[in-house]
Length: 177
Image 1 (cartoon, rainbow, N blue to C red):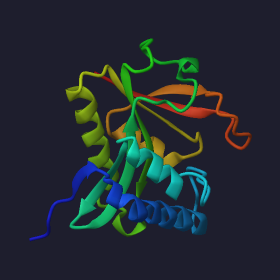
Image 2: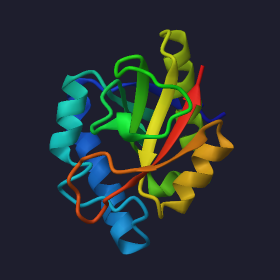
Image 3: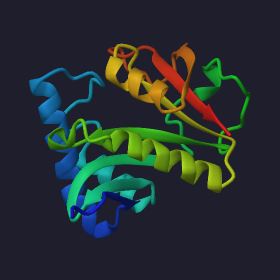
Image 4: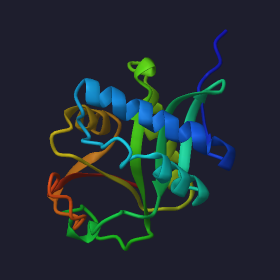
C-alpha cells in the first residue's frame, strides 16, 4: 500500500532540496504557463526557502522523502493587507497567511494543493487565529479555482504596496474562523 502524503515543517537539513523543489517548479512553470508569475532564482528561490525554513514558516508535503508540495504559513502578509476589502477588519498577527504554495509537476491532479489548504486551515483554526488569508496574481485562474473550491472567499483586488510593476494588484482570498 502506498504511504499517504504527510505535511511537516521543513528542517534546516531540508533547505537544499526545498530550494531545488522550488527551482524545479518555477522552471516547469516557465516551460508551460507561469500563472503565478514566479521568477526563477528570485521568488520562490533557494534563499527564500532558507529564510522561511529558519523562521519556522516553510512546510513540506512529503510522500516518503519525495517533496510533493511546499508552502509557507506565517503571520506576515508581505505587504499592506490593510488595503484589502476583507469581510472582517483584523489586525496583523491575528490571522495566518499562506504563501508560495507549489506542487511538483509530477504530483499534479493528486489533490496535494487541497490537502495543503486543509492542513493550513486546521493549523490556523487550532492555533486560535481568526482567519487564513492568501493573495494571488489576478490572472492565476487555477489558484482562484483551487482557493474557491476549498473554502476561501474572494475579497477583491488590491495594491499591497509590494512595488512590483509587473503585478500592481493582487487578488485576495480569506477563510474566516
